[in-house]
Image (cartoon, rainbow, N blue to C red):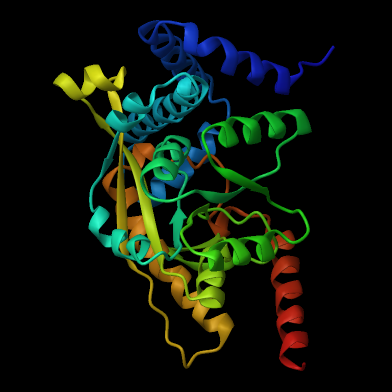
Length: 325
């Protein structure tokens, strides 16, 4: 009999907020350390990714870094399972915005703001904070299997005040365009991994990676400002720790606004804008590599060569067809 993952997650969201935080923290640390020791759940790929972040790192230090990475990753899940039970004051205490002045003027003008995020820190906590303190959040979530698991994640995020669109559904990009053009929206998009066959290949840590085209494409189409954005953990102390109810908080840092050359073609502008936010994200990952929860293949050198060649050929054919219209 298989495990119903959706029900398992639903149970975790229902029960975790009732468990004392130190007990839950210890349990999830144990899960992280066990997965790391047994090399389960993508630990090998995590280490291959981290080797690009810290070239020349010796094996012992790499193992230490990957263990810290797994602990950070499990911290995200622990926080996600308990976030529905957090009070507004606790959410407020857990968040720190390093440079809010970068984006606030756009919200003051009633405009929407686009954020290109990486799998860093806790994006659900940031979304819950952002929809209360900046603007209503509109974002896209990856469809997960089984469907019941995806539905649980959508219900969880919508309970925090976010509007969620399902990646892969018809008209998702059009819905993002409409929502962005309405103004007064915060549109954060996890983009450091391409889930489609329409991604952008750019440089990161001296290698080629494939990331999502969505943030830059949305910015080029709507004129909305786009910022690379990092979410990293920090230790809390004193009164802020007591107010947060946890020893960990999240720091949001916005990169410089992405600016593209309007004389270029749309495709070229998307590539140019994507490289800009990726450059900022790479600098933030170098600063806190343990908070980059990337347990999947994103570097072109790690991808299946034949499959990737077919993807590139398909893209080129589509681009050529589009150029003749």
